[in-house]
Image 1 (tube, one colour):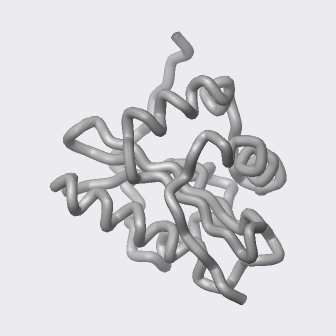
Image 2 (cartoon, rainbow, N blue to C red):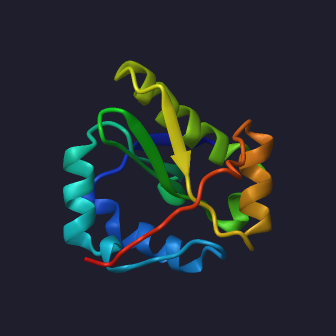
Length: 139
């Protein structure tokens, strides 16, 4: 199977949203609505990608930064395409883009009960940060 990775566009939104809804361990919020994704993609050019298998959406990843640190969101691969290296390829595209921007550190937030996701990130060389606690506030 030929997997093609290209930059995500707003035209991918409906297919991406459907994949995200089907992906266990991936949380969605109001910030995943189309208008917010448009702002995110415009602000973080050339950092978010989709993987296509014969024009069928196989995977997604969102990547953004604040000029110092980056975050990766919604790395998701459709169940029928898992275990083929697609997530790693999507991640590689993000990391390459961040290197070009001289962003030295990237973070990922994973639900603590998402064992499959945690396993992927740890195997990919990402480290737990037990000294950190994430706090959030709805504005």
